[in-house]
Amino acid sequence: EHPTFHPGKCARIHAGERAIGIFGEVHPLVKEQYELGNAPLLAAEIDLDGALAVVPQRFEIKTVPLFPPVLEDIAVIVDESLTVEKVTTVIEKGGGDLLAGIRLFDIYRGGQIGAGKKSLAFSLTYQAADRTLTDAEAAKIRQQIVRALEEELSAHLRS
Image (cartoon, rainbow, N blue to C red; front, side):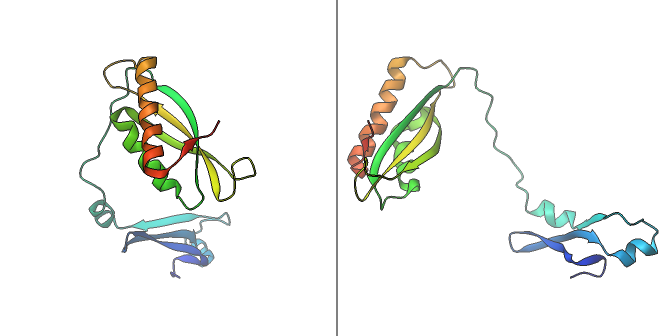
């Protein structure tokens, strides 16, 4: 609630625990007082010093890659109890520095997988900053990922 804003149509702006402003639809009586018409009018009051205090001083950036990526999808069968986060962590570890991206795109449970199991399908991106990866290099990265999944999670590739 705020006297400038329509009841139930405003909100506070927070950065973590710190309140840095308020926004919403201007109260009809305020619009009438200033002859602002009947159309909905939105406004905000923001403490810029408070907002700037929570913005990092530096932003890490990555240069746009000069060399093309290698894209590959894999599906692994894991125990139902394993989290996607745990599987992702093992894939990242196995892929090393040349694994540039990982995205889960499917979870499958069913008779083909077996009781107590699930299939997780990931889209993987391999990329080097200084060269185009060869097929052999991409295959080696894949082997390292599969080996890490097998050794650490007893996972196996879905065929």
